[in-house]
Image 1 (cartoon, rainbow, N blue to C red):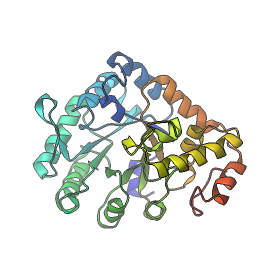
Image 2: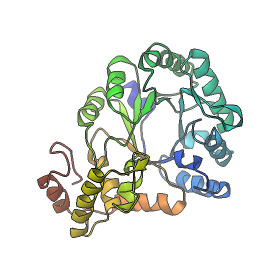
Image 3: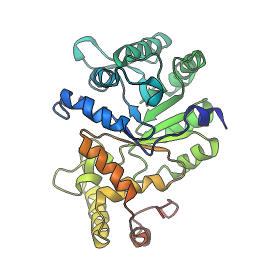
Length: 308
């Protein structure tokens, strides 16, 4: 068993992401404990958070909900690279050694934990060299000390993650929005991770919402209103799903897990019902004819694996 596999063995197919908690009113604070307890009742519970989410508030809420729970019974991933400001001001990029150490210390304090299972370098898009020269080596030291168990990076692009796969000792990556039912541009990167034994988490499998809502007015894609070309493709995907009696959201959830490189989907559920629905969707079969139609209509890439 490789070091990566041993550090990240027995990952669930779905983990809970707390990124949406930063949005005002997304989830009342008093509902967080129930949602966390529901996730804890599932096999191999996994939580993904970050200081950037709500200026540390999502970590604080998650930590409070995990208080008193056997630490060995769940795993938590957080992130480094953005220094949150007192009073909730705009976060600032900080990939310095001291910044990384302060970030990990702050996350552990807010979460009430003695170690993190995963620490990702968070969106270092404009700072690749500093990530390579400073951030990753600092995280390796913390991994050696047991302060974190695995090192990774979380981004909305795959090209830089592919560079990290070649030039770092990363155990895992979190890729958001770039391998979905709508877009499979990252197929070569996924194969790279599979060959290297790097665990892969996928976020943003609904592309910021449009694969959950469908092509409705003002549908969201990549954190903005979807452009006409995206609306058209989603309408085609939605129509194909309807012909086979499948919801677009169900297909969007199952499709990426068919790729053998993908370990876990990080789902930003804001209620027990949302998380439970995602779990149930994984158990529900989808007609192979749907995937055959999507391939024949070139709505998915020919090389993309489909659920069997």
